[in-house]
Amino acid sequence: MILTGILCGLAAMLGYGISDYLLKKPSEKIGTYSTLFQIQVITLILNIPFIIYYFSKYTFNITVSDLVILTIAAIFDVFAWFNFSKSLTKGEIAIVTPIMSVYSIVTVVLSVFFLNEILNSYQLVAVFLALLGIILTSADIKNLHKIHSTKGVLNAFASMIGWGGFLFFTGFIKNRLGWLLTFVLTNLFIGIFVTLIYLLKKGNKKYISKKYITRLFMIALINLVAWFAMNLGFSVSYVSIVSLISSLSPVITISLGLVILKEKLLVNQKIGIGLIILSLVLIGI
Image (cartoon, rainbow, N blue to C red):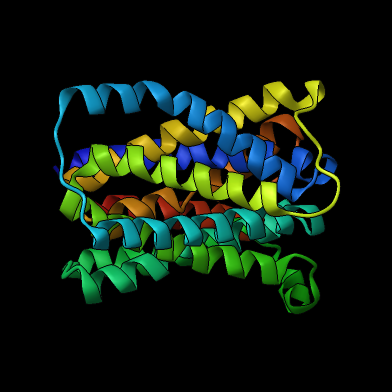
């Protein structure tokens, strides 16, 4: 079961790493609100087959408290999406992405205290090594002293809190409704919430640009697959472990930079990647 959870977390890590890389350009060119709205509309459309399948095959009982938790989770997710997109328009992806990705520590702490998840000593060490690895892999150690004045950092921290809270509430509702219904309803609630915000927002609204439609579709599809993998992972393993592995996505983002942009790794980044690989081994023990 742990192995399945790790594989699901790795699939989510890969998906989120790629989508983070793809998100920067449309966020800068189209704007935060439009980018978020268009991605969520595409996600809702892609989610229709899952909705039809679930509602035709299963019966379920949703309470008022379930609806409240789903609403709170959607608010956290939209808050995180908005701030992360905003951070990409302001700052460098190599700085804001690792800050955002530490959302796992928020989820881990909340899950241990409120979902009664118990991590063994190896997994606790893995948490520390993974977080240290994220920092080392994604940052230029020589310029860390400048991080307080770097644009987009506050938005990145806000997205960290938002996604940490979102995954915690998702884990909470998963225990009540099961992973598949949780997957369907979170997508539905987030899409509805984003649409309402977009429609209520004053000012000019930029609709889908043909230039970016392919990229936006790819982001939505990749995120949907990653979110599906995470929910499947939640069903067989701890929320804390699966969310931690998924948060290692900066490794993918940096790898894309190495291959596509011909960037080079710093010494601290090589050490960071080594620590991340070690953390993945320890999580499975």
